[in-house]
Length: 447
Image (cartoon, rainbow, N blue to C red; front, side, top):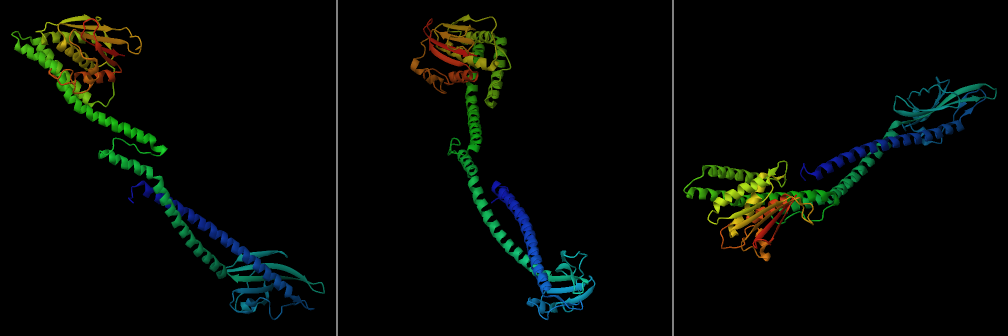
């Protein structure tokens, strides 16, 4: 498991949390056990004090007498760890158990008769002090302090044993929990591994997109990744297509230049205009190839002016045909579209019309909305009197590389470019037979 992986980080984080939790639990449990053990010891010592009180007697002289042997055998064994002391007036030692031979009496604190105190002295002994007042037969009262003590080592040994047992079981439980957490993490992160594997498959070309069943939390991520993959593929396809589009877009300006050079009277203005047009086409295609699929319409172009420029140029290209352009366009028709896009759309449509027509090309621009297509506010009709295109081939010629007549020179991408650009502009391209001229009619609906 790599140190930078999510599984490793989560496992280490949860391991640290578990370790901190177990440390706090151990401290609380040990402290609780110690307090419980001290309370139990206090109760045992209280019982021993009551036992001493039950066997203690006052003689006629008022002296306290203890029996020769006690019920608790540990009081009889020196160094047994259980000791008993009786003092009078908190200073005068009266008696001690045989187990306390050689030990100094434990000084009791200041207590009232009937009160007791449980303390840990400087010699690491727990002692229970109990203050009593006895009255002899003569009515004389005597104050005595009964003290029973036990070495703290007995309680410490119990606490240490409890700590050892607790640490062992906490360690076992911690290992089990970490193992369970590792399995849970592996299962929980399985969707991430699945999406990584699918991305590797997409990278190797084994898959087109992320198509597995993912966790609901990853559906959005998978969708965005699929959109990104599709966008990049379209972007790369646009680079390839733009090279072909560039060659096709330069065809008309080059033909005009060729016609000017071959003619006896070279029109320098026309040559300069077409050279500038070629430069614009190259710049436009480079920008279009680098585009990310975004379409910006912050600039306006005059459709009528562009149509006039293109028809003037095409008259020189097809001078042998003597084509008549029937223009029904407004003096000015500004539209929110890039000039390069309009040149591509109108130029390709008019070039095809001039190529196939007999003598007439009709161009009509209408700002009236077509019935049933209310969202399109501008309509461009381009018609010719040529043979037209069979209805069953209309959809085919919109595909890249397909031409209506394979015997006619061309690249088969002009109409594809028109269709793509019209679609990017949010418009629609329709083809059919011209009712007036009998040839082909192309209708471009622009928003």
